[in-house]
Length: 260
Ligand SMILES: Cc1cc2nc3c(=O)[nH]c(=O)nc-3n(C[C@H](O)[C@H](O)[C@H](O)COP(=O)(O)OP(=O)(O)OC[C@H]3O[C@@H](n4cnc5c(N)ncnc54)[C@H](O)[C@@H]3O)c2cc1C
Image (tube, rainbow, N blue to C red; front, side, top):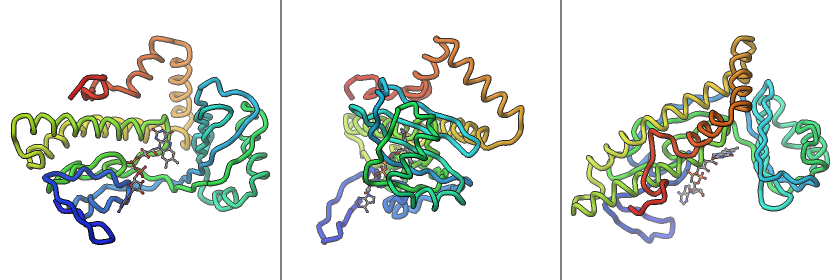
């Protein structure tokens, strides 16, 4: 692989690990297609300062248009992702900081007290995208270059970390055996090792998201019951949280705290 930068400098290697996000140029260069589907939802993101402490707890409110998720940052700050109807997104995105703060307090039932919105907002149409192959032609895809899922249940970054830990493990093994670290069997093995984890996560997040926007009462009931049981049964909750960070199906060494 030869990567050439905008100003002309170039570097060559047996394997390029593409961590260049959802519009990955490396993925395009390797000729890897993606299967993509858009949701009728838009995520608005911003950071907040607030009066009440978050106690290092993330809060996800489920609304009829999608989740409203507060993720704790150090101190009296949190990051917010709230999913809205695409028709409502331009109005919300254009609110002044003061108007946005009032809207957030209303939607969050003021659980963090009064809020102030910090500079820098994002607007992301929700999509799900999965690369047809996670590696080919001396390119291995990690993170959103390989898979994009809606921001529900905080799974995206964890998936990307497991990608990185897995390709590191496979490459270290190939290097130890004095093999070609970019060979087809290396990239194919990487694809096999990541497929089940990515597919199961994508399906779970897709199902949860569909259950939020579905008007079908039994679906709403099943989701409510599932969340109720998670809330009430501590071992079940701990198992679900463990599965979210380090699923049984994918435990690369680096994620278990072991050396390569
Ligand atoms: C609204 C929203 C909320 C989310 N919330 C959560 C959450 O709560 N928890 C969670 O786990 N995940 C969450 N995610 C998912 C998480 O953000 C992604 O999984 C993660 O950022 C993917 O990391 P990445 O490195 O693959 O891609 P990115 O973060 O997109 O990084 C790609 C990098 O590559 C760079 N790049 C691209 N092309 C080039 C180029 N040609 N040359 C040089 N550099 C280039 C970009 O500048 C960028 O810095 C959320 C995503 C969204 C959209």
